[in-house]
Image: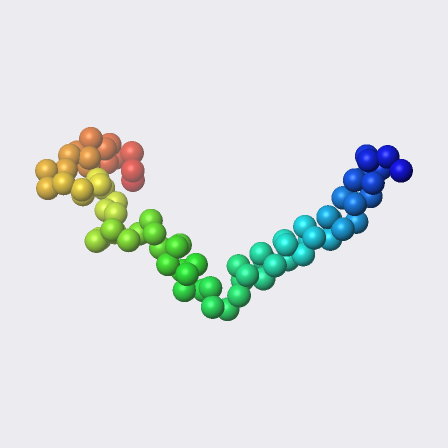
Length: 77
């Protein structure tokens, strides 16, 4: 038996089974009941430093915000 045929049979059987079991383990680990708080915390990362919602006209990031002044208000209606 040459090396290629042996490795091909090994990959088609046991390695495929091992990769499937690894995948199944990762899916079960990701969706386990105790991971909900971790996933919730990770999902909220983009919103951690927001103190107020975005305004509809202008960004409101600074006190002298001129973002709204540059908008064509008639086009928004």
